[in-house]
Length: 107
Image (cartoon, rainbow, N blue to C red; front, side, top):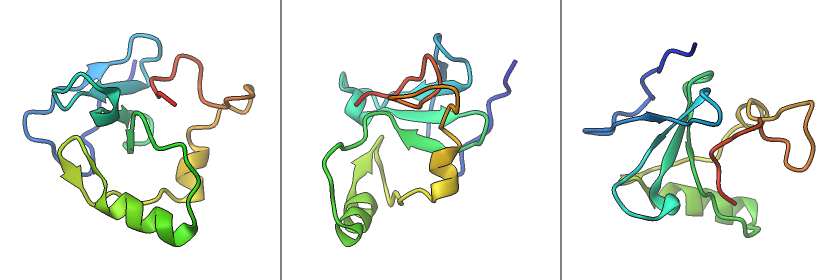
């Protein structure tokens, strides 16, 4: 059983809901009906991710600007993850996508 870790930043009145298909993750909805506004807490690492990240390609500079100005779950000031943080989501036994089984991510 996983223990919910407090994310690095606090979302007032955040109510994390365990993701039924994979208890490693919990979801917080910003109150809209779109998963584009939801964030996912990885209880294994304590990292908070966008549930529905953009899928278009950007230059490094464009990606940095996009991430720091993007508003998700009423929060601004996101950053690009380090490669080690991205790799923490990889399931080495899976392929296309390599995310863990039952992950909550969209796109």
